[in-house]
Amino acid sequence: MKTLKAHLSTLLPCLLLGSLAACNTVPPTNVHQPMSARPVVQPAPPASPGAIYQVSMNSPLFETKRARNVGDILTIQINERTNAARSGSTTADRSQTNSFSVPVLTGLPGKSFLNAALETNSEHNFDGSGDSSATGSFTGNITVTVIEVLANGNLLVSGEKQVGLNYETEYLRLSGVVNPIQIGFGNTISSAQVADARIEYRGTGSVDSAQIMGWLAKFFLTFLPF
Image 1 (cartoon, rainbow, N blue to C red):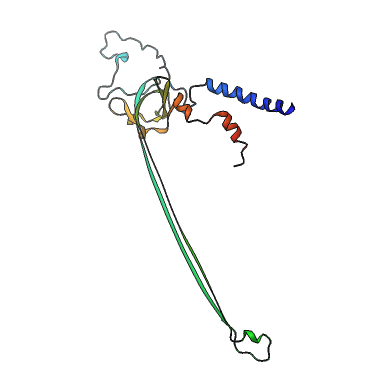
Image 2: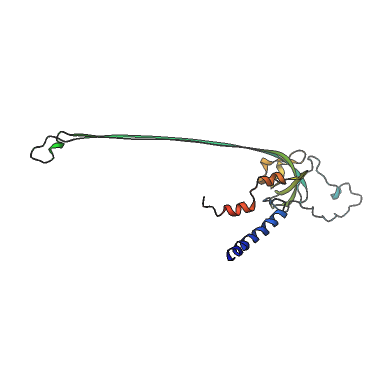
C-alpha cells in the first residue's frame, strides 16, 4: 500500500503538468518581445497661418516613406539558404623489422641457442575518413512592426503571422535589428540584412502532436540506463 501511494504521489504531479501543457496550445518563442507596438502619439505642431510650409504636412520629396518610428511596419523577405560541407581523411603507416643472431660460443651453457637467428616484424596501418554536409532553405514574407528605435537610429523589429487551416495553426515569427538605410523600395528588406535575426516556423495541431513523444513516455524514459 505504501508503494502504491508513493507511485501515485509521483504520477499525480505529472498528470497535472501534462494537462496544463495540453491547455497551452501556443508554442513558446524566443523572438524579441513585444511582437507588436502602437505608434507613440505625437503632439500637434503649432499652426502657422498663411505659411506655405507646414510641419504637419512635411514629407520627403526624394524618397519613399520608410519605417523609422515605433509602430511603423516593414516587410521582411525571408530568403535563408545554408549549405555547408566538410570532409577529412587521415592515413598513417608504420613498419619495423628487427633481426638478432647468436654467435658460436664455447664453454657457455645454452648450446642449443648457438647459431640461432631471431627476426621480428611489426606493421601498423591506420586509414580514416569522414564527410559531413548540411543544407537548409527557408523562404517567405512577413510584415513586422518597429517596437523600438535604438540610440544609433537602428530599428528593433518584431512580428508574428498566424495561419489557421482546419485544425492546424502555423506560426511564423521574426525579430531583429534593421538599419533604415538598407530598407529598399516598397519598404522591404531581406532577412540576410537583419542583424540578430530570430526566425521561427512552428505549428500546433494533430500533425505537430504526432511528432512529439508523450509526456508519460518521456517520464519513464528518464529512468532507463541505456
